[in-house]
Image 1: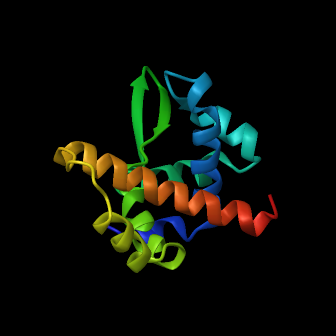
Image 2 (image 1 turned 45 degrees about the vertical axis):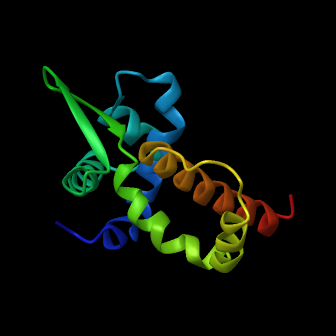
Length: 134
């Protein structure tokens, strides 16, 4: 399997992922290849080639309906990217100090994992907003 960083390094693949992310709330059944081609103004063979790479990396899932293919984003593999980026945006010693001062009972493991993921996401969003001047 290709390294996730190699997969998302390609601009067209990032555009496809962004398109699928934007369309996700309105397209429960997925987005067709022809819709992706029309929205990105890229040839169908090029889109199909990139979708294959994204599918093999686990970043998209496909649903076949006759001759049509409908794609949906699968963000799970991007957690590796998130885990790699977070240390650049979050002061780990500050987080450890806050945790040491906490008077709350420990959370169950699934809740802890969710909270950590949510915290990392919030840190990345906060940093992005600062860089955008928001």
